[in-house]
Image (cartoon, rainbow, N blue to C red):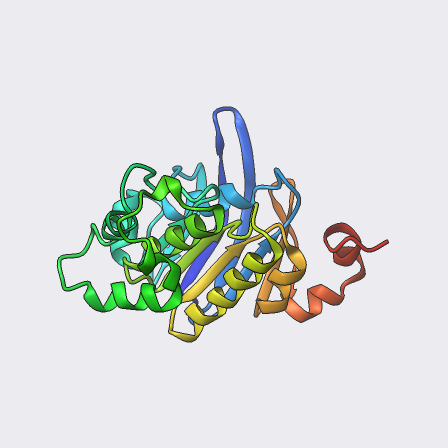
Length: 235
């Protein structure tokens, strides 16, 4: 059984239906990526899965439990964390306080998880007392991911983690995503940098106008002529 099962998901905002009945699976231990143009419905899909918005239809099952009618905090408690587009850190709180906020659903010891975040992102340990809003864009992305990891998720949803970052930091973020998977987490990734996303993904789905139009392994889609023309900048 897949860790995450999405069946005929519909979601949107007001009168706009941005996701029009998509279905996808994410198996334990995988990196799965969603690629598509701006406005295709990728971010809306993640928001509907994590409960940030209420689906208009369909079913979302996580670890064998239906979650499409649960509140976001309840979904986090089950082991699903969402790093939104734009990072969403608390700018007035320190780095340390931001990390503590990531563990708000837990009532057990968190020191080992803090050390794990410091190991992944040594720069954060150097800036524990610094307000989150004073960090660079790359450091804020590290903080957003680190905060999500404090919930000890089985599945991590990442929405555009490389957006606005320098090429060097993009490499760092993608290396970190692979390290997170090696440590046991499963990753569902939305990413505009389709080439790098497909390079690290086990499987991928292409979304166009709120519908999945293509799916396959990361390597196979990276060789697909239509994908290369549309998303990899090749004529």
